[in-house]
Each structure stands twice: as structure tokens, then as C-alpha cells.
Length: 180
Image 1 (tube, one colour):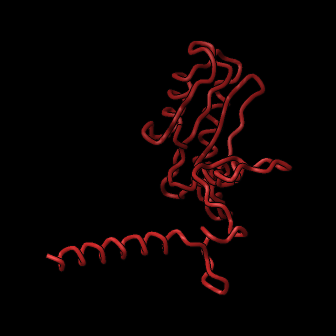
Image 2: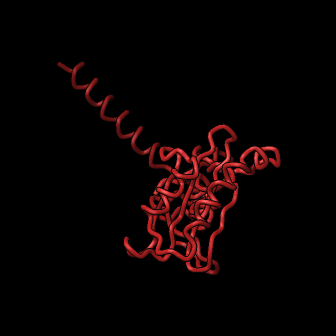
């Protein structure tokens, strides 16, 4: 009868000793941990925007919002194009410019711009036409034509000021039309 009681006492004593050892602080010369070292960087539980001159609470993980936004939009940036690519895309760029210029002085719409592009030999499946403003009398119509043979995007617009058309690179995630 005495043996089970002794085993129980030993187990309880070991459990108490282990608990006390786990709660004890760092012994001088012992290993440093983030829990026991007050100079350790804080481990936050939430992201907080960094603001110059403002100290964040200890539960915050500092986040540079501007840098994150720039990275988030990087996929929309256009890649550089070589002079050879621009030269190869010039006939198509000129066709887009001629199509848009033919509409200057007329009441143009997104539909009339799309029709002018097709009449100029631009495949409608490679053209994105977006009206800005009222549908029947837009302030501006933007055009993006994917020139797949040259990996160049023909980007243009028509508005009250006239026509602008340029050869530009594809967006970083591929293609000519950025995701909205």
C-alpha cells in the first residue's frame, strides 16, 4: 500500500518542480530569449502603418503602407519596348492614329471608334475601346490595341483636344489591358 502513495508523491513533486522551473527567469549567463530579454524587438499581433515621429504600441508590427501600395500596383506598370519593337509596330500605330483622326470634328462614341478601327484593318478581338463619360457623348474614348506580333501595345485616345496614339510596352503581368 505504501508504494502507490510514494509514486503519487514523487509524480506530484516532479510536476511542481517542472512548473516552477518553467516559470523561473533567466539565470545569469544563461541563454537569452525574446521572452526574457527586454531589449528584444517586440513581437506584434497586428500590422500598423508607420507614421514619421509616432511611436507604435508594442502590439504593432510596423508596415510601410506607401511601399506596399507601390508593390501592389507594380503589375500594372508598362514594360520598356525597344526601338526595333516600336518600328515593327509603326504600321499598326499609324492605322490606329488614322482611324481616330478620321473622327475628329464628328460626334464620336465608343461604337464609332470601334467601327473606325475595324475599317482601318484592326482586328476587333485585339482592340479594347472604353468610353469615358456619357455613352452617347463621351468626354474621351480610350483605345488599347494588342499588337501580338511585336509584343507592343498601341495606346491612344480621342477627346476634345484631339488624338494621341503611342506604342508602349505590355503591362508587367502580361497583355496590354490592365485588370480593373
